Structure formats: structure tokens, C-alpha cells
Length: 73
Image: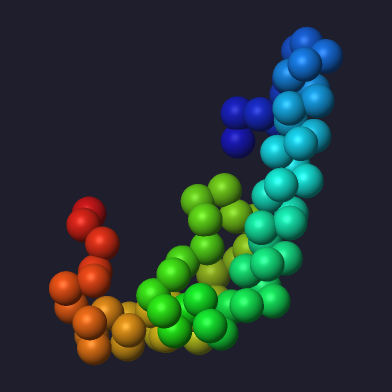
């Protein structure tokens, strides 16, 4: 992540804010992972969560049932 080694005071504040924001989003994803994965939602790109086998299986089964909702690559 590029925001880990900031130089200025503003950049340090922004980096701390991003860390807090990412932690809060990860907590949300942990708390609601069952619902989100059954709706085909993956964790955000900056997430620090580890890959979960059950989560990936839920997402794949969602896209098998709903092929038109698969995101473009």
C-alpha cells in the first residue's frame, strides 16, 4: 500500500484515517460475511482479510445461479 510511508503532516493524518477506515470496513465484512457472500460481494480491494474458502464458494454459487450479474473482467 502506498499510503504506509507518508512524509508530511497532512499525509500522516490521511494515512491514519485510511487505516481506521479500512479496519472499520473489514469489521463490517467480518460481521456480515454470510449475507455479503451470498449476494456475490467480495471484500474490498484494500481489505486485510484473508481469503476464505466458504466465501469464495458462496460467490461462485451465486454467479452460477445468476450468470448475468457476473462482473466484467
